[in-house]
Length: 256
Picture (cartoon, rainbow, N blue to C red):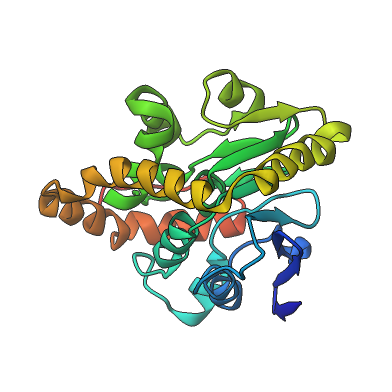
């Protein structure tokens, strides 16, 4: 077992379990947690491993990046290592199952959807509230939403910013299952057990085939899009939006 502040990693036979352990902060991702997640998914799995499980303590799966930490440290709103973490989860050679017991918002939503299979409680919602605080997703982050949900759902998630209930995402095929809270652990165990029983070379090959097909989008030129995203992230509106979210008030956007 290894444990960093806010992230715990255990390996039991074929299963690696990575747990977000900061429930008092709604598992918001601070710098230490991002580092812990990156370490949990770096390198090669052990020879007996077949599957990784990503879960969280408390009622909320993950509220996204820790905005309070970023404001306190003066970190520019457009800079974050979260994409490196998401890429590490995506690139893990074996399947990753997310067990989502509660809301997954912004970076938490992306973290869940970068896993290969998502099993969620019907009480959970998935959202991308960036537009509500003056931010915009990068090409990479928006790409994942297009991959799993298509342009119609991506527009709703990003332009409105309102959370979408897990049952609707399951009906759309965006997540694997949405089950009543009392059935969540059993449903997740069924997925994990089935994956652990499959041939490890097949699991690796299948995940690699799927990822290679999805990665084709990364070669599309997008410098102009990056410039628009960067302008939003470094705007006065972004600073106002984050301040308003932390102060629990309605933001006053000016378009600057």
